[in-house]
Image (cartoon, rainbow, N blue to C red; front, side, top):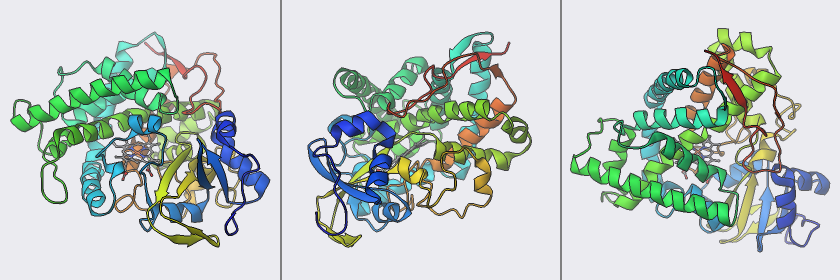
Amino acid sequence: TRGSIPRSPAFDDTLAFVRSGYLYGTRRFRTLGADAFEARLGGRKAVVVHGREAASVFYEGDRFSRERAMPTSVQHLLQDEGSVQALEGLAHHHRKSMFMRMLDEPHVLRLVDEFDLQWARVRAEHAGHTVPLYDLGNLVLTRAALAWAGVPAGTVDDRELAGRLAAMVDAAATIGAPNWIARSRRRRAEAWAAALVADVRAGTVEAGEHTAIRMIADGSDHHGAPLPEEVAAVEVLNVLRPIVAVSRFLVFAVHALHTHPAWEPVLAEDAAAATRFANEVRRFYPFFPVIAGTARRDFDWHGRNFEPGERVILDLYATNHDPRNWAEPRRFLPERFERWDGDPNTLVPQGGGDAATGHRCPGEAATIALTARFARLAASRPFEVPEQDLRISLRHIPALPMDRMRVTMRA
Ligand code: HEM
């Protein structure tokens, strides 16, 4: 061990990670009494870190790239060669600004409007039926994302695309067969997106001026050259897929409402309370467990020198439940956000630091707005929640209630 960072007691932690899931880091931090430790994971060394200060070191100051940081099985589903997440420095900054513009406030408001329309439609289509809310959410969000992004209606089978996009996230932490199936589905989604970009560029498909599809098709790199078609296609999926992934938070919002029904009348009355509720959903429930990065340059932290190429894993789940920043972290308490200071490195379900300059998620405002909007819709009881298994296993990544939050839609 170099410096003051302890080593995990196990020779290799891969199995411990698989067994403990979201709680892997939390358990080690507790037994070692440290906010960082060294471990072998997936046959490679890593320093696992958590907390406000660790998040700031990880996300601020351009210290880390995502190069060779995640296993390729994860990489090929959630990011890809040439995409914004794979870029650094000027190239990253330029590409990221396209995402920031695409997801600014007016665009978010439009996305929420599309979501409202599509929710009303899906509600009517499923009246009287009992269905997993997770699947409904995927469909509503896919339709909303397509309309919002400027994809002309009727040019794609939205149910099939919803399945493909959701599968990319659901299978990201799997290895072997499920991963390969999701990867092949991803390739088909990419081929569809590439054809769409080509059509928009050729003018055979009309995409409105400020739509995401138009912005990506017209996008250029930091030297002014147009984005290659396959890169543009990857970025199309990079906005559609994570919008659909918000379905998980919709499910968790209903789980939270169902288990804390006192919030129902509050949300119906108060939009600001719904935003606090959405933030507590993002803090409390498990989604991305960790983010891995590779050091780009030398730096010191915790009395230890980090060398270029070293792998650091930031535990997002442990940071969101860190008792140093969150009182009673294992309780669902939206009111905690009435007094929150807005520190960018304590609430990190979508990364830390600054979205415009680092790798923090550009879709956070969209995620909060959609989740808050849906929490309010759900508070007006458009469905019943039948008897079911509501447990959420922290060993399964990504997590979901056992029965995918089944709801019976009112007629
Ligand atoms: C980055 C989580 C929604 C687009 C990230 C990162 C996290 C994250 C943890 C940081 C990755 C890193 O540090 O390498 C989530 C979660 C979401 C969500 C939990 C909830 C569903 C969205 C939405 C969009 C989006 C709605 C866009 C419509 C992106 C993009 C990046 C990113 C493009 C890469 C940014 C970069 O590398 O600079 N997301 N996200 N995400 N997210 Fe999200």
